[in-house]
Image (cartoon, rainbow, N blue to C red; front, side, top):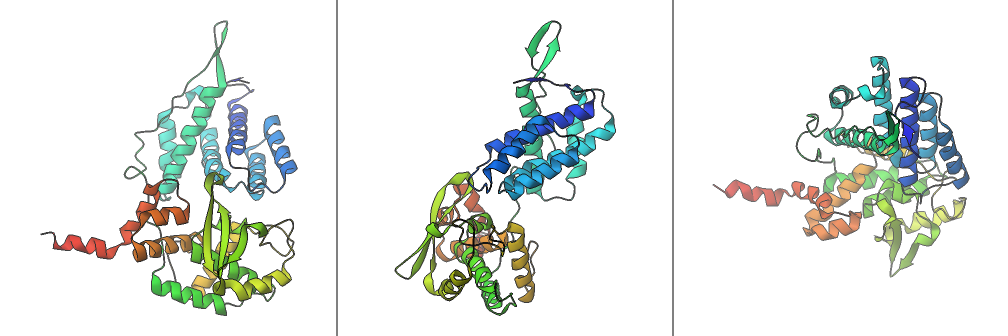
Length: 354
């Protein structure tokens, strides 16, 4: 069903309407594999269909969706939330008053303190938002209807992103720092009920390079032993399956202890004390505390840095981009190519050029 561009009594309500519709569209297009409560998800979609009264009500709904397992929605919601709060004080007479100049000004002011990658995500979200409106609206044209108002927003000339990709070299630990980090895991003062679980999940991330979201979603049926190796099936972005491995002796003692304590709902391998799935923020906080204990400080100290450390070391050991791509579950080998920037031996050859 299509709607008038300015379909409410005022610009504020019309803009909120399109924010609701866009968020609903994005939620239905994200991978639903990690959704924990399908009934609650349906309620969220219904709320968005009915429409919210304020942007803060929409923010709460999106938070509920994120807690259900749809963490990727924040990539779209955060820029749209900022845009809404930027546009309302402008007191526009119509949504048709929005153009590329206004959006370029918004991006320039709202992303000034962000990384190039985050700036790129903001641009993508804004272009997607107005692209959605282009497809879903119609404007009155005399007596004729179904004549869509087109923004055709591209923001190609927006200068907030340096270079083509906006990619920033990731933080990572060197081999010595990884050794100190692994030693710190063993002596960190975890709660007795949680130490086995926390040690296993953090070791799995650093030893296999899987994403935090993949680690907290592992099911009992996804892990089994074979020739002193734990084989773990994980599902990455786009619900794509792959297998990672970790030596049995790395986690066996902790695994045996955790299986005695484990009281998880359903088939989850890891859970909190209430039996629910762990959150990514909890794992990241735990990793940051261990890093501080080990005296390791990086620009980004979260759990995702462990994945970069694994990938960097894997490439430096084997110089095999295909292996890195397969281990990390990258759909495009160019994503894996960033780890070649840390190959100092290869780059040292450039010093002999002249």
